[in-house]
Image (cartoon, rainbow, N blue to C red; front, side):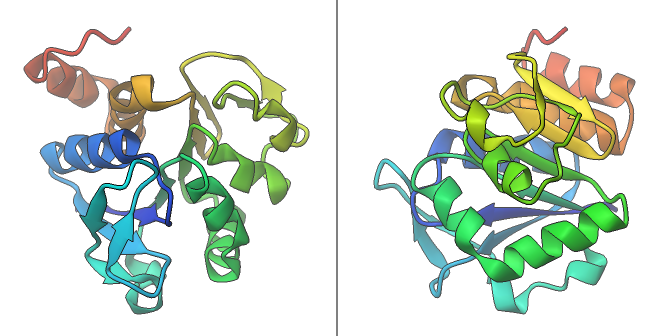
Length: 184
């Protein structure tokens, strides 16, 4: 079973985090919600507190198959500032392991130089943070091992792209159909 690490930072976008976690668990993935703060309880951008499964220091990145970053502000800035997370992202990219970020969070990948000459998307206004990327403006983009999404309104579509990437299009479409989601 694939293990997915969804990372929460103070100020994360709640719709994105919860939608992604929910869809990936419906797809029967082992989803670990990881707090990059000093607390297991993390406050989102709209003051909703979500309880993570474990702290960053407790995570075993050797057993994780994909790193996922919900967006939101200042959550995305907090993700970008976490040196341990940046190190893990670089390790994953070097190994061509999948990475996914939505909304403002693709700025983390952009700041690390991972989007150079790759199609990517983000929340409008954060394009300059995706250094070297080919900004498409599409809801969701996949370029090699990196998936990016535009924002809260496409969080389910973004999560389904992760499902497709880790399994296949048929599995993602079946899940979308069960959830009454119309995704092309």
